[in-house]
Image (cartoon, rainbow, N blue to C red; front, top):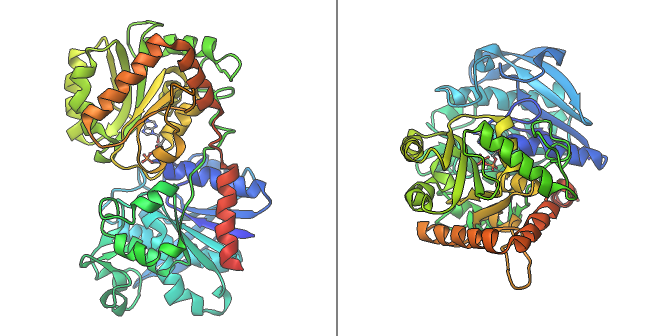
Length: 476
Ligand code: ADP
């Protein structure tokens, strides 16, 4: 099967969040099973290994009334072909998103993907679209390109990685950028809440919709989690599939990770994690203490990630025998209170307000527990990485956190982490207290937890088969 993936980001070339991890590892897993996988991303200024890309071709395309240059570059990594669509006006800037003209930049990208299919002769069986950046490819294909001779027969899937980011914009852009008829707005195909909505358009026009965990697939059908798209998703619920993301066990591997000082596996984790803990405490300026429970947090600082709960209970948690190492960047509304608390408790909290890949790996490898009390979590990769590195997750039971962390049962000694149900600061504190009780009073039970977490099967093997099942059902 030939599959083309359209996404705003993919490892190993560029990453702003979990989307890049998924698009770096799912195509690789499918390629290893013998399928031809092609990923198309913008050629940002920050693309890694930019000097090693091979120039392929260039052409001009139309974005509404704008005639735009489009260069194409190529690289092949782990059996997956990556194409980079180049337009310096749109993409030769720092970072990925957050510019005033993002709608225009990604309209260009959407046309570039569709043009590449014919100009590079890579017409796929499945065109797999990811999040709002690629969403408008679905109506463009179904309303225009499917009628061109070369294009018929491609099946479209749309994957929702986070329904909170929908690509809402002015309805005028439907014609101005995408050259599509206004009636698609008035008949509701691309409209939600009186504005144009790219994600809704993809939900309407795609042959199947997937999202990144089974629990999240159920949650987004409800008023509480659907972010206004629950009705249209309800209408398409028979074509909606929840498939848990995996992590790439080749790169997310404590035995080989070059960012980790003392590599380890299931046979020597206890000794090596203790050494890593000491090294991390020194690195982030915490008192070296092998006995204390060190809790890690690696996150974007946004409302989604449960920071309100953490900030609400942090003073109280400082009365416990714990240390926290926090790595994150984002909203001032969370950075400022965290700075204040950390200033008073420098001996217990190390606050690192930045994006730092190496430090994130060392936190996963060195801490005893990892806290992730999200308000909502489509899948979440951080808890899976921490489990792989023997760091016990403490999570809220939502979305992919519920599907990937099995709650600890102290009587039959099962489970891979700790979890609580309601978005409530006291519930979170209770479960942290319970985790600390097991950590300090029942170290052998804690060790069992660590080993079960390390052995949890959260790679792509099963999940990539589930994607194939969806793809095959469309081709049948
Ligand atoms: P989301 O995609 O919603 O941010 P995920 O848990 O799915 O959440 O993925 C987050 C990814 O980004 C993980 O790989 C995590 O390690 C990484 N990450 C988040 N914040 C930082 C940071 N400040 N520094 C380094 N890596 C980070």
